[in-house]
Amino acid sequence: MWIRDSRSAVQIDDSILHQPYDIEKQKEYARYAATAIGYDFERGHLGTVVHPFATSFSRNDARITTRWYPDFINPSLFGTLHECGHAMYEQGTGAELARTPLARGTSSGIHESQSRMMENLVGRSRGFWQAHFPALQALFPEALGDSTADDFYRAINKTQPSFIRVEADELTYNFHIILRFELEQAMLNGDLAVADLPAAWNDKMQAMLGVTPPNDSQGCLQDVHWTRPGFGYFPTYALGNLYAAQFMETAVAQNPAIDDELAQGQTTALLAWLRQNIHRHGRKFTPGELVQRVTGQPLSHAAFMRYATAKFGELYDL
Image (tube, helix red, strand yellow):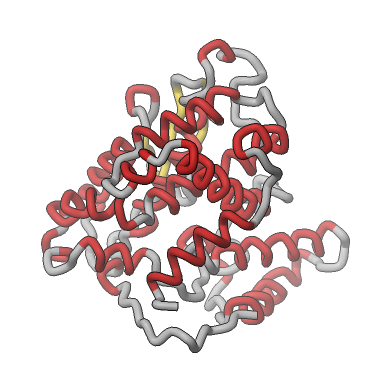
C-alpha cells in the first residue's frame, strides 16, 4: 500500500517540467545529453517512437529512440538517457566478440542496470544538472529562464504516485514493476482472465499507489511488453535498479575520481570502468558470475537502499 511519509514537510514543485517545450529544441538537447554521457553517434542514431526502445545490429550500429511531448520535458530527456545506457553497453562489447553469439549484453537485468544507471544515477544526479542545465536553459529561456539547476534537479526527483511507469520517480517505480509481475503471474496461472485485466490493474494501482488510471491507455495498455509478447520481462527493470546501485557503489570505491567527475557532470571515468568491467565481456559470464566478479558479492538490495536513503533523505529533509 502507498504510504505517505508524514515526517517530511518538504513540498517539491515540479511545474517547470510541465510547460511548452519546442520539440525540435528537445531533439537538439537529446543529442547533446546523449553525447555528454558517452553515446557514440558515429555508431548510432536517435529516432522517434511511441514507446522508447534501443536496438543493436552490432557494436557499430546501436540505435536509440525516444518520444517527444510538447508540454512535458521528462519523457524525451529520460527516455533518451535510458536508451543510451542500453546502446552504450552494446557499443562497448569487445571487438574480438563481434559476429559471435557473445557479442551482446549478458541478460536483460544487466542490460537494464546500464539503462537505469544512465537514466537515474547519472541523469537525475545533482552534478549532471549543475553542469548541463545551462545548455537546456539556453534552449528554453521562456520555460527555464527564472529557474536554477537545483530547481530542476529537485523537480525531476519529486516522489509522487503516477500512472505511467517510464515517467515514475525512482522510489515509486518498483511498485509499477511489482504490479505488472503479480498480474502477469495471475494471467499465466489462469487466475486472471485477460478480459478482467483492466479492472484488476486499476484495483492494484489504487492499493499500491493510491491512484486509479482514468483510462486504459494510462493503465494496462501503456506498455508494449505483453503485446510483443514479452511476459516475464518487467522484473528485469527492478533487478536493473539493484544491479546499477551495486555496480556504481563498487565503481566509486575502486576509483573515487568517478564520484568527483559525476559531481561535475562528467562520465569519462565511469564509462571507462563500465567498459573494462562489464561492457567488453558481452555474454562471457552469466549475470550471477558477472556481479560476483565485479563487486565481490552476489546481487543485494543493500547498495540501492543506501543510495536511495541518502539521496531522498537529503531531498526531503528526512
